[in-house]
Image 1 (cartoon, rainbow, N blue to C red):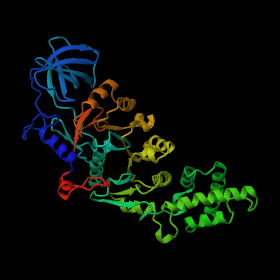
Image 2 (image 1 turned 90 degrees about the horizontal axis):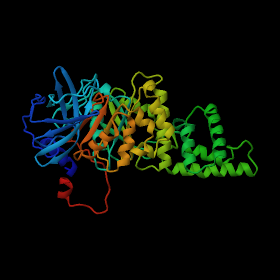
Image 3 (image 1 turned 30 degrees about the horizontal axis):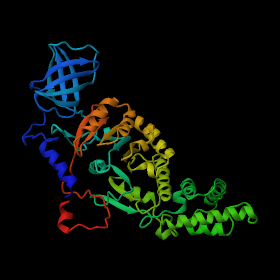
Image 4 (image 1 turned 90 degrees about the vertical axis):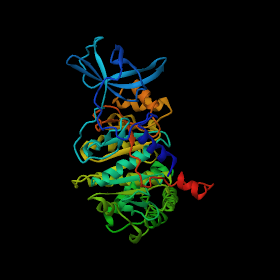
Length: 467
């Protein structure tokens, strides 16, 4: 067992942030006053005195006669005789400031009941189960956090929950993270998963050739001739056939002359580079198809495409080909997939990300963007996000970028994220009805969630098992 898994289990057992939690703690605490005192109220913030350490994100209920106001602890510090916490208003508020006779109580966080099969994600710091309905996890989701913070672990928790609920899922895996998960079939692109030229499509092939440094003029001739070839020839087209066409001068309108030679030589060299990626099939016998993969998972299940062996241009082309297939699929299918993109900015073009996000309501495709570089995600993704899961982020600029989602004010996000316990995250969006919930993801006991990291210096066997 790895150290981070032990730590996550420890957080469950201790209740988070080192505060012991009795094992028989009920799921719902009664809101009894525990010595809390309202010190001041300015704007939409209250200053509250605690006789004990406040929990990060703790929910408080401010009551004055029939009026009730929900607050959330976003910051706290130790004083000489207790603790002082800053709490923000959450939920509806008429703007009327409470009087000094107002009472304030700890209360349970308002975890909503959302439609769809329950997907168990973990527990709150209070020990309450967090299981949003599947509908609340649809459309656009963003999971961000520093390396080793637990973001990929949460993605696996969500993936396994969706599989159990019968959802079809696809994963684009650049770090070999998903190979050990049960019920997830892995295909290594370029090895046991190759695509024919027609399956890849003109646009994706152009993306790869452009990334290999093909001039714009040569690309134009390539696209024109390949589109015509698709009309002329209905059977399988392999990479060797394209190389032969370049050798025979077929990508230029005239087969002789300096310009024709330059264009065909350029395309031949780039097509040879494309062949070396191993992604493009040479014959029908070694060709796979996205249609075949969809048939495997249509009634529920997951396929992970291992992209770790591909160059960046090949990854970009594969992602473009997959998006082309998905956009065509949803026009004729009632069921739509959930797609997980690990570090999408490394291989999905900005146009591809924009198409996924802006057309999410129309296509029904649900996307999960998982990254340790939030600033690499277009601002439009954050503004369109239905759910955010934010793990520890050491850089303030990353947190400020995530705040562009508009789901939570920047000051609260900074305070909450910077104080998160290890391997915990802040969840907000449709799954929480925009209330920020500090979540301890399910540790997935008994499931191998480790990514396959290669090292030069091997550890002794006993250390490997306990790490």
